[in-house]
Image 1: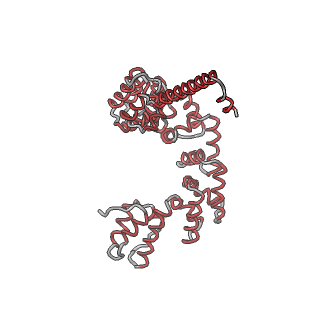
Image 2: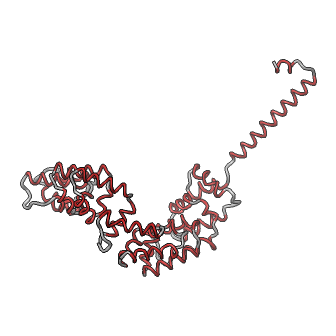
Image 3: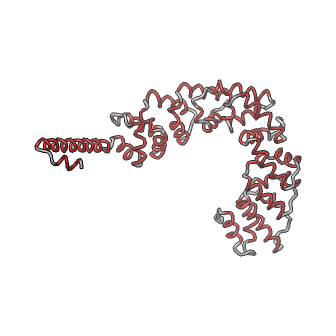
Amino acid sequence: MWILRFKSRNNNGATQISSLQSLIHSHYSTKSTQNHQICEPHFMVDYLVNSIGFSQDQAFSALTKVGHLKSTQNPNSVVDFFKQCGLDKTQVKNIVCYCPKILTANVDKTLAPKFRVLQELGLTERALEKLFRRSVNFSTNRLGANVDYLREVLGSDEKVIKVIQRSWWMFSLNYAKKLSPNLLVLKKNGLSDDKIEYILLKNPSCLLRNPDWLEATIKKVEPVLGIPPESPRFVDGLKMVISLSESTIDMKSGIFRSFGWSDSEILTMTRSLPSCLRGSEAKLQASLKFFMRKLGYTAAYLATHPKLLVYSLDKRVMPRYEVLEILKEKKLLKNNFSLCSVSALSVEKFIKDFVMPYNEFVPNLYEAYTNATGHPQKIK
């Protein structure tokens, strides 16, 4: 009705219609122009795609970090610097993809000083790639101070490199301030220098936690796993207590109890090889069913031969068990080899000693074994 009334008006109405049409045309023209401006590609999109190797989606996503740049001068300097460091195009792409903001970094003031700190350590290009991916998170001074501290504690650049490669994300922290009190905690609890060094090399992150947390965690190892501080396995036990909650350890211990294990047998196992508890619930149950119900092994035997519970059941233990059974059935074995000792052999050694000598007596034994493991080996 409003439209009909509007049309019935006089020339003034026509003027209003004309004005309205102009307004509408102006609105859509402006909107169209704005949309065109928004859709017009930023020069950095072309740069990231053509020079770095980004996809269109990756390039547009990175614009939030580099869209303010006015030219490609600084990005070119950064990329050239990476190439001078020995990084290839893929590594440069990985760095920029992980941290687009690095294209805005000052080469002389930010990147080159960090590179010089680690260059003398002899880091590989792969390690340098990881360094530069994280480099926006720490200063050159912090990097230098951390490297100097690790050198003082560990005594060799090779060991410093190992720690660095395991703790890139922690370079923003003050190592001396964080590590020193935890090293004292370890010494106070009777850990030798060799064990402390091993922890630092294998799991440096745990030594950057709160000292009270570390103290409490150390004190759990013996009552939970039966491993005293003087044991060679104490560090492995500490690693398990750090990685698994008490409730998880209790749950996994309960699986062993459900198969008739006593608490003393469980402690015998964990004292010898704490990593037995690392397997999933399904893996532990499958292994215990196979060894105890199919093969008739006792809890006492498995507790003193815990490696059997760590090996892959499908890819290692069962294929070797089947080979042994075939050879025994055909009376081809002169000695009675235990599954535990045979499972401990390397793949190459097992094939050499238990497969190749009997391949002509048991047709397709080699092919059957290697296919069962899922990793066919070439005959040498």
